[in-house]
Length: 220
Length: 402
Image 1 (cartoon, chains in turn blue, green):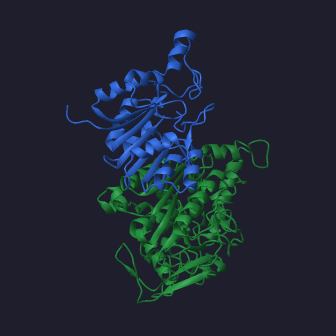
Image 2 (cartoon, chains in turn blue, brown):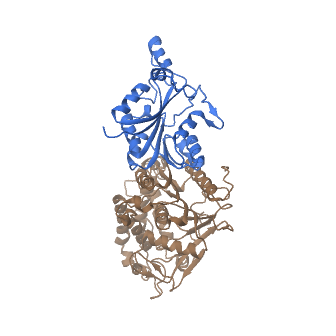
Image 3 (spheres, chains in turn green, cyan):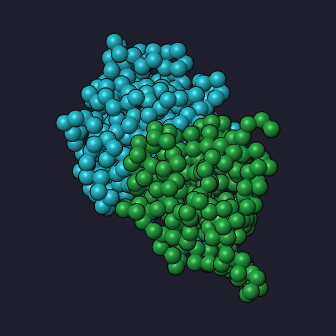
């Protein structure tokens, strides 16, 4: 599993707005001030640092030792661990938000992970690469091979991503497990939001990744 | 079987050791009858003394003090030549100029634990009531007792809040006890290769060691000093068994394999044919020269009794409720005495208490003893954590430079 695998991967440099990555700012704007946040797969801690600079109490889980070391050096509270095995150990309602960035597709049990996110946190912010992105579709349709993109350059036999989905699939799963979508944003290759006023099928086609703010649904 | 050499042939009733027990060459804080140490067993221990060493200078704010808690058979001689063995301090790779525990930046304190034998009051000390060593008349002490005594020392030194409490193994247990008992007095904590309670397997190993000591006829029910003997064989066997638990299969294999000791062929005897046997015998016999057998019984017992959750209705997280201390928990992949699972249980409890905790499992084949050895990744995270915490504490110069 490559929980440390966040943007950027080779080839694409995510757009920055000032000192911060545009996609990080988008996520940070979804978090209300003064809340408690767990960033699952926090990498080098860049997003956590942004959150803490806004007075948010942040914690992280990171698989790679280099990532943990880097975070500890920044004064962040980060625990070495794995989304599949370690989320179960967190108590209910421990956080206001749990963030899972570009990791869902690399977990063994995405559905269980998603359920845990919303058990531990009142809200979850989940982002993942959209397998319905036009470049993916084109490669499969025309090229007849498993798609590879700038952000997902691994071949099928050495990729850590074992559970790809499209934005449409993800929306369906949320519906199935009674998760409420409070906000949904599609990002392009550079982490810039796709204009909001476009219909769903456009997002599913032109969004390179989807970012969702989720909360627990009511009783069905 | 004429060529069988026992572990060690002669007892060493060293005058040096008797001297260090009551009149240590390090600093000593003496507590009189008016300041008893209230022990968990119900006894008020008074008078008593704590032997300690310090390195570096306490700053004007008294905010840069770091307390090192030592492991089972170590002592306060962290970064100076040991007065009895003549060997370098046990953490000289960690404590010094420019090292992670930088004596140019921090005021570093290490005290011999209560029940120890390097100058703090313990079973080898002279019982003021009899003028003879306490022996088994010494009350049984616990990890919380050790920490209570350290807190009295810290008070004596005029320090309100420790910047950091750090230690490995039994030292790590003391770190956790500090944070559970005095959370407001510990700014950050580094418990290394330890657990919140001693496991059944570890109690079993300790019992093996104690039985080895007590089975030695020279032990004399703990009154060996009056009998002019030392249970050196029993203590050496105890040390040999314990030493195996501090290493790992891979480390032993890397160091010794099946190599022979100064010979090509087996001697068809019970002599130390293998290097690993010779090494263990050396470990055993050198240990008895510096450590008191009764003290070994008491300190292993203190570890056995340790169980933080037991004091909090068996809910570990309750021990750390509302704690502000920053934690960095470290474990080692090949440590089977205090395996990573123990550290993870601690981390889960700290998470459940909303504590500010970092955790890293360091990859090494060096076993439990890795915390005493040169493991670069361990040093990196240690240094990084202290520098970031120092910044938060306003100690300045948290520049990330080594």
